[in-house]
Amino acid sequence: MKQLSLLAGILLIITACSTTTVLETPGVGDFDMDSDDPLTEVASSAGFQTLEEENYYLYSGVDEEHLYVIAEIRSRAFQQRIEDYGLRLSVESSSSWLGLTYPMGMLEALVDFQDAAVSYLLDPAWQQMPQNESIVEQAEEDIEHLALLSQNPDESPARITLTELRAQNLEVRYQYEGGFYTIAYRIPLESGRSQQFSPDAHAGEALSVELTVAPPSAEDITGEELSGAAASDFGGNMAGGRRQQEPQQDQQEETLADRVDRILGRSYSNNFIIQLPE
Image (cartoon, rainbow, N blue to C red; front, side, top):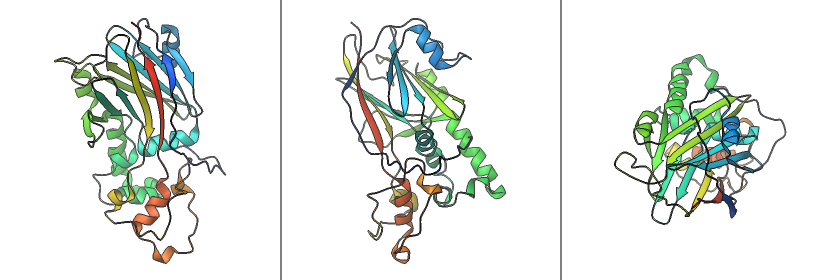
């Protein structure tokens, strides 16, 4: 994965936010998820609805069988957060909930390698060290070919291959151009034997859709408890706190979990209502 250079001086903290924006998502023509053309151009030609948010543009559309959601990232700071923590799309109908994280983020990809996630966060040079090359290569491959899936908001998501998703008529894809992701999701509207991963929505229904970037807990990453010596209310910054650390007066009192918690920062989420056509 390419690493983005950070904009000097950016100290924007991502705070959880919520909207009630209603998208009258139109029925659309043919949309080719595998097109070599920019997905946003294909979506515009197909008649997708567009919503311009601060950090990304959101495109949505439906055909007879699928809901399409595309996020065109337009903020370098937000892009860095996605590269680190992943981007989750959740869709909730009156009867079901589906959560899908793709790409899943570098921290998730590093959890199988002892201490790698902590080193990645605390040491800006870790990723470029020759002895870590094989770990980074495996993590980048996993990010490209794996997603996180959950069908219950109260349960931890499980890893799943993109091949397994396609077998259930669900597809995700990202394009990477000019330092930014364009991330596309094609989700079956109704569940069935060959499409078990679905919000099971129906024509005319209003779907609650949420985009989330959520760092894992410092305690999960480090295996330690927070001491409270270093307050994390101010969190990491939107541009990636691990690259802009400042000395702390009470450094000797901090645990490793405290240090990681300060870098991780806050979660971001944004809610929309997608109104399906009759």
